Structures are given as structure tokens and as C-alpha cells.
Length: 146
Image 1 (spheres, rainbow, N blue to C red):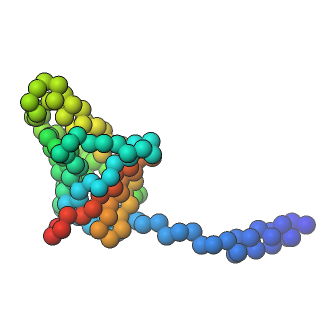
Image 2: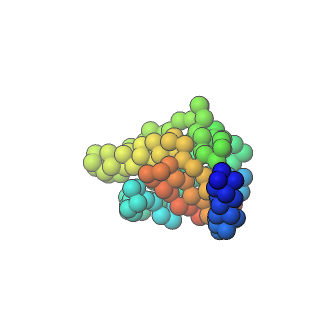
Image 3: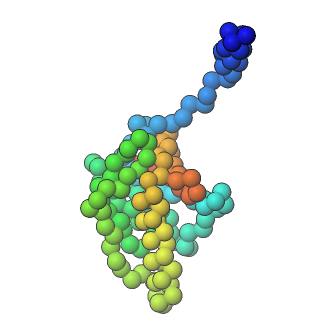
């Protein structure tokens, strides 16, 4: 009876379609990437008017911005996840006109920093880069000439 059960399981596995190819972090290429879409909880997450996420990966260092302040520091890809390493930091500028505009801009900067430090999965295919931590997904496209 045990042999029949094993045979049935093997037959079922053999008849199953192969799993879809999953892009690997090894396909990741350094360069400048610009956001094309941002989602939180499966819903579009609007960014402030006139802003987008820009991340520049170069020789083990990254610089990321979403309009005003810039986060910089070393990074690594560990098991397909982005790891912002110790020694990174962020500028502290007041951008915008009114205090309220400055606060909203700062909140967006801090949101990006928190997301990047969450060790999102890195999914790279061709000119496309996706960072996804399970609740937030940032879709990006490699900037021309980088």
C-alpha cells in the first residue's frame, strides 16, 4: 500500500507543470532606477506631486531619494534581499514652502528610508527592478544610459 501511495505522489509531481521561473537577485545590475509604480497593501500609493523614487546603485553603495532628502550608504544583496548596511545615513533638509509642506515631504522621505531598511526582496528582470517587502512594492525602471 505504501508503494502505491509513493507511486501516486511521484506521478502527480511528474504531471504538474514546472514552477514559473523566479527572477533572481543575481540578475540585478547596478545603475540608476526610477519608480514607475508604488503599492501598499495591494493598492496604489501616491507620491507627492512632482516626486518619484530614484535609487542609484553603484559599486556597493546606494543613494536613494523621493524628492527632497537623500539616503546614502553601503548595501548588499543577501539571499535575494536588499540589505542596507551600517554606516548609511540621510540628509536633513527642509524642503517645501510652508511648515506643513516640509513635514509632508519629510514624512515621505522617512517612509522611503523605512521601506529600504525593511530588507525588501529584489526581483530584477532586464531593465526592471522590483523591491517588495510583502506589504509594499516599488516597481522601477532602469534609467537610460546607466
